[in-house]
Amino acid sequence: MAEVTNTVGRRKAAVARIYLTQGSGDIKINGKDYKEYFTVPQFQRVVVQALEKIGAENNYDVKANVCGGGFKGQAEAIRLGIARALVEINSEDRVALKKEGFLKRDSRVVERKKPGRPGARKRFQFSKR
Image (cartoon, rainbow, N blue to C red; front, side, top):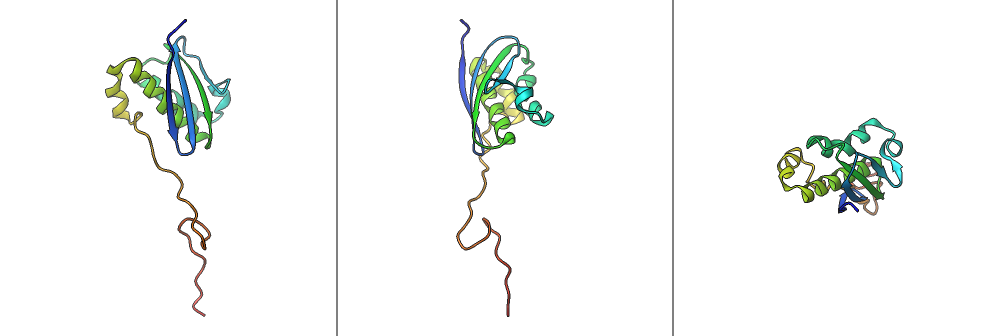
């Protein structure tokens, strides 16, 4: 049986568990093909960016379990997980992936709503009289 590399990627509220094995380029997300799971081409591109950067899109099979967040957060969480797995397999790829920013966890999340306000920072209209 092929060696499985297991990593985690996170973005916003999305968490992706990645299982990377030697294979033919098959990418499954929650049991579906990635093109079926992400119908928007932009998100499909984000998922394969790390593999394309090192020219290994047909060398590895990816199985991903994703939960939480929206489609953009999930796609970027998968990208981070794949990049981390590729570095674990071959540390020479780290330089190229780091240069593109694929190994950095994007920590920006939605600011919480404050009490007595309609949103995080918005205020109700002020009336002088």
